[in-house]
Image (cartoon, rainbow over all chains, first blue to last red; front, side, top):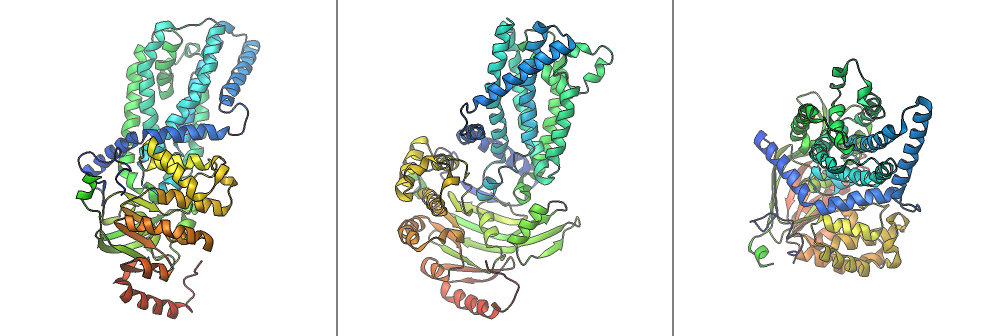
Length: 288
Length: 266
């Protein structure tokens, strides 16, 4: 019989998975979101495989494979470093480690936000052929981008080694920030993915907004450059979120005052994501 | 295995309504929905949106041993009903309860990714079903033997001939044994040689499932396999009962309606 299948995955005390669906009431909605995220977690192996195949597939047939990610990032950072230091006469030693780390981190943020807005529409085939928790598609987007990030981190390490920048134990202080990023990434994917499934204009809008944010956030320029109107910078949610991870990784102190800001923006993001996803989760399949 | 035997599978559908919204500007969805619900039932809901009522007040229940055949013209709501049973479309009104593992064979390619190799698709499908790595390997062997793909198993599915895709999809779908089996009609389409080979395997799968719901235009399949028939029309149940009762009435109606232009049978 079918018993061996899914024994580990199935519900705890009852031997049977039971599907009981009806229009949702408010407590039901909250419970179902919890269940969705919990089920997504249980399918971590599937999620991992899907994400890895996504990365592999992009470069299937090429000689370098996913290491094209590393190579193209290296080329971009080398070119930008050359350009900026010769053009603007910025001191190389301080700037290039900063620039490479910033670009790689921004690559992750941009990747999650942009791909997050299509995380459900892209999984159309899967969503329409079987019942799966929606958190899985969001997590797939995040894990895929973490894998890309890990390929790019190699470049940063090389740059750090060349310029003998070593954050030491200070780097460990980036961990809480990284955890916050993960939580925010999930919220962003759920929020933008739901919006993107309903309104197909959302992905291009998000893409152009992210382009603007790339320039108005301190990615290629150091935040210290802004002397007047530093307060304005704090209105940009990416500023505090980037700094709580980047500063420790560069071995710098002084990101503590940015934490309340980062947590505040994350709280708003999570609230929005939860409210929308709770309301619309059951409708997603109808929109796709 | 013993623990599972103690409880029984069941399907219960009560006053199920499924309604698709038709949004402005999403021509893609609009077109698809229209194609699926060929003779659509348009209406405006409370917010003045256009909606298609794909299912209207469906009620039935199935016990272990029941084999339900869904018949009806294109756009009668058969596939939508299967999707609702699989938990893909959550009810707009009413209630759906399904006890027991479900395997839904709805999509022509079962959500296979054609860029991935056959082997990778097998792994993904196994992981969907929550199988352990060891079980996935045994599924892989099983599929390899049945589908006779040879070295193509490590090639992207996009390089397969259509026959190979059907063999792979079929072998894959039938190697995961559910207690509640939902099948759409595409599954029975295939060339004669393949169907002869597939028949034994399919019958075994059908026999092992406690509950079967199958949607098809092939009346002989219904009369051979099904113990009950649900005749759907415009999202509602036109008639239900044993094949002996329902099929003659359905066929009579189909003959009469053959002249009518409203359903373009593909």
